[in-house]
Structure formats: structure tokens, C-alpha cells
Amino acid sequence: MTPSERIPTNLRTLLILEILGKSDQPMTATEINESLQLPKQTVHRLCATLEDNGFLVRRGTSKKYQVARRLREMGAGLLYNSRDHIFRHQILKTVSQTVGESVNYVVPEDTGMRYLDRVETDWAFRIQLPVGTEVPFHCSASGKCFLASLGPTARKRMVASLTLEQRTETTHVTTDSLLTELAQIARDGFALDREEFMDGMVAIAVPVKDVRGRFIAALAYHGPTPRMTLTDAMAKVGFLQDSAQRLGGALFEPSDAPYTTAQR
Image: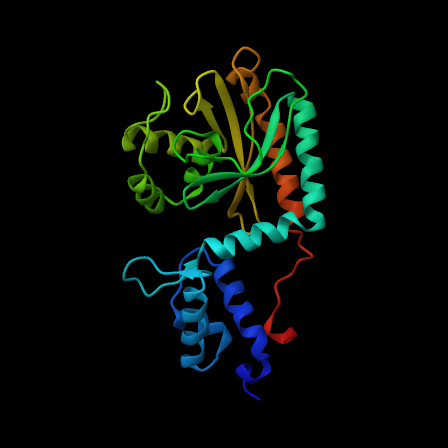
């Protein structure tokens, strides 16, 4: 029996999505098929169907597939509706109680960073950015945290594609200044919003990573400048990074082992 004959027909599409989800780079149908060993025309047909239905996308004339918005939203929804969401929310509550400000779990989308989960501060005076809010990449702590997680080449390409809209006097409006700060963020492991998104608000963010060290989300908190300073935020960066590591461990436990060919 060939490897392809051992893969049930209704499992093949899921395995294609799994392979792409684990890859750090877009892949051609041929590259995807290296571990599946299905008939070439079968993989091309399945990938084309996934593309037609918004689960995969190819940029320009590229033959390489990558996950599209519909698949990312499905993945986010699965995480949100699992028991992991409860544990994640409890970690956010602990962080909020410790730092005394609103804490956010923020994921990258096509047009910005979206608040997937949030715990509000008890302060009556607070900045309202509810779940579902989308903030720009270039002038938010979570957005810069994501951009800094990219490799240098991908980072430059991503920044070049952005419209650096000036939101405040401190917003980055040139690619050079933004790239310089992103390189520093990559070294430091945290990002700051120095009233770049909104006057009177500062923020700090750290990356949440999976077991392969890939960026999954940003753990961030923000507050009004009369109450929160960047010095205070940086004093708590170690606690925030430890919390982000706990989040990654909760979402991607080692026991969640990859499904191997031998198990099929």
C-alpha cells in the first residue's frame, strides 16, 4: 500500500492545511506534496479548491500558497472556543490585576492587529478599545511587536507595503525610522507605544510564541499617561514576558504532538 492510499480522502485537505500552517514560508503544491506523496494532480486540485474558497492565497504571479484570511479566522475561532480560551483569559486577568491596566491579546490580520481577547481595568477613567478593535501595525505596540518578529527581509518588505499614516506627533512616518525601531524591538523582546497611536495613551507589548518560536499574538497593556508611564511599563516587562510564555505553553502544550505518517 502506498503512502497516499493510507490517507483517507476526507483527511487530505486537512493535512494540506496542517503542512502550510506549520511552515514559516509559502509553499508550492509540489513542496506540500513532498510529505504527502499523493498524485500530483490531486494536490494541485485540492490546493486550487482551497484557494477558490478563500482558505489559501497566492500573491501576484507566485505559485506558492499561504494561508488566507478565512483560514486564519477559523484558527482563531477554534482557539477562542476551546478550553484554552478560559485559561488564556485567566492569565490576562492576572496580568491586569498586577499592572492595574487593561490587557489585550492581539493577533495580526490583513489590515492590522485585532483584539481577540481583553480584560478591562477597574479604573473608571480608561481607554475603550473593545474586543474586535483593529489597530495599525506601524503605530501600536502590538503591531510593532509583530513586525519585529519578521525576518529582516520580510520586515522591510512588509514596512514598504504599509501606509504610514500620522496619528500623532510621535507616529513613525518614514520607513527608515520605523525599521530602526523594529530592529531594536527584535533585540529587546518588547515594543512600546509612545503616544504614537493616540495622544494621551502609552502601551507595551511582548510576543506570544508557539513551540517553534513563531509569533502567534501579542500580549499588551495600555493606559492613559496621567496614570501610566513607560518607565513603569518597562519595569514590568519581565513579568509580561513570563506571562506570554505561560500563554504559549497553554495554547501549544508539548503533548499536542504532530500527527505523524506512522499514525495514519
